[in-house]
Amino acid sequence: MAPVMAAVAVSVFSVARDAPPVVWIISLVLAVPIAFWGTLRGLRTMARRMHSMVEPYGEARMVADERGSVTTGERASFSMHWVVFREYLETPGLFVLLGGDRAAGVAVLPKRGAQDAADIDRLRAILDRNLKRL
Image 1 (cartoon, helix red, strand yellow):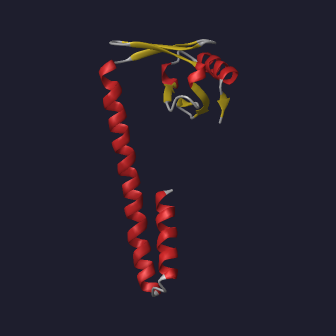
Image 2 (cartoon, helix red, strand yellow):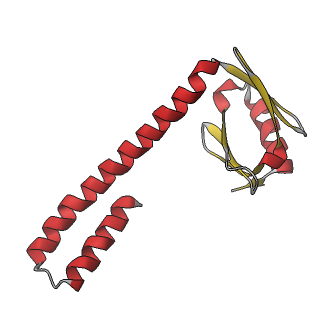
């Protein structure tokens, strides 16, 4: 979205200032890659910070039922009720749970931890009963 917004901003500014086409094109050529680079850098920084927060807890095992999920790790364990989350989305490798009104949180459940495809189907059924699918 940032590269698109950069292109729109450069275009609007160039039209408003009645800039020559050469200046407009050079501005686009510079602004769009810089916005793209900044977006990637920001996402990588966010991923590193998130990883550094959860890495000390070690590997974890998650069990889900109708009430919520219980995560047990090497150094900590916690439970989350489904009311903490409002909706979820599914990617080829993950279930991503998104926080509700009272909690701005995100939980990521990797599918690689499932023993077989039936486990993924059972988790999907539990999520469908308790959360809205995006």
